[in-house]
Image (cartoon, rainbow, N blue to C red; front, side, top):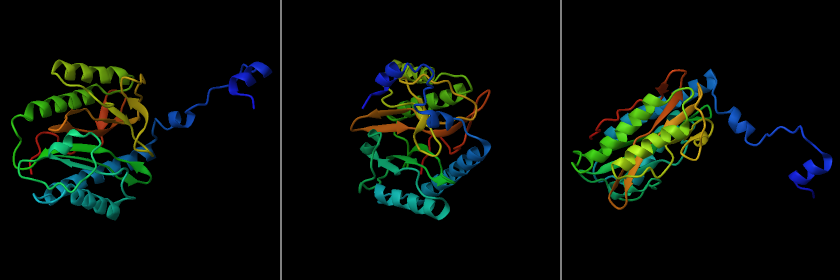
Length: 252
C-alpha cells in the first residue's frame, strides 16, 4: 500500500489541504453556549471547594476527602471531569498525586485539584491550603507561586503567546532557585486537557473565547508542593477567571 508521500508524488497532487488536528483547532474557541456550560461547571466547583473546606477534619484520609468531592459532584453534575487529586503533607510534592490513606494532621498542607462536567464541559481548579496555620518555611514558596499565577492572569489576553507566558514564569522561578516542571496551562472544554497548550513547547496565540487553565506549581521532592490553578476565559483585552475561590492563605 502506498504511503502518503508516495501517493502525492505518483499522482502529482498539489492541492491537498492539511487536516491534521482540524477538529481540535476548531474546538479551541468556544461559543456562548459552551462558555455558559463551562461557567456553570466552574461555579459548582467553587461551591464544592467551599463545602469541602468545612468538611475536612484532622484524622480524615485523603481518600475520604476525594470520595466526598465525588459524591458532591454526582448529586449536582454529570460527575468528575478527571480523577480528583487530594494530597497532604509530603504527598503535595507529587504533581499528579493519587489520594491515599494518609490521615490529615494538624499544621498540614493540602492540595486539591478538582473538576466536574456540566453539559459535557469541564471545570478544573487547584488550591493549596493549610490546617491550623501556614508554616513559615512554606510562605515564600506559596507567595512566589501565587504572584506568578496572578501575573499570568494579568497578562492573558487575545494575541498573547503561550510560550511567552510560560517563559515569564520559568524565568521568575529560576531567579528564585526553582523550576517550572510542567506546563503552565492547557485548554479546557469537552476534554479536561485539550488545545491550546500553555507551555514552552507550544507557541500558540491565545484568542478571544478560548478557555484555558493558569496553573504554576513548585514541588520540593519529599517535602511539599504548591499549585494554584484557575480556569480562565480569554477576552479581547484581558481574561475572566471562571473559578473564583480564594487564593491568599487559606486556613481551616
